[in-house]
Length: 150
Image (cartoon, rainbow, N blue to C red; front, side):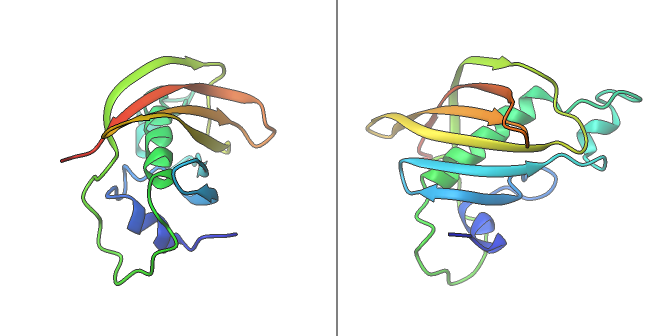
């Protein structure tokens, strides 16, 4: 199944330049999601990271994973009344652990973030994040814990 770009805007409160997800590839509510990010030469962060040798910042890869987690925790099948940004319902970062960076991401790379729910305890959700490039080679991965805004 394919989701329209509006589904991303309904699921996430983020907007440019902090919106990392360009496409939802797969979504199983509360279980798993696969989201795509196209790293382009026009990314604002690449202007200074690093001039002449642009590398997509690792912290933005973690952000891509967090946004994919929030999409995983959102019911995308519910009909939309508008595309107003929602409050950050279950996407507040509480912890990052064991995140490793295996190779740099550069302009032209297509990143796929696969997230899967590892554990849910009350309002907390622990999820595994795995980021690969267009060839399936591992770029980064680790574990994040997110919590409700309430």
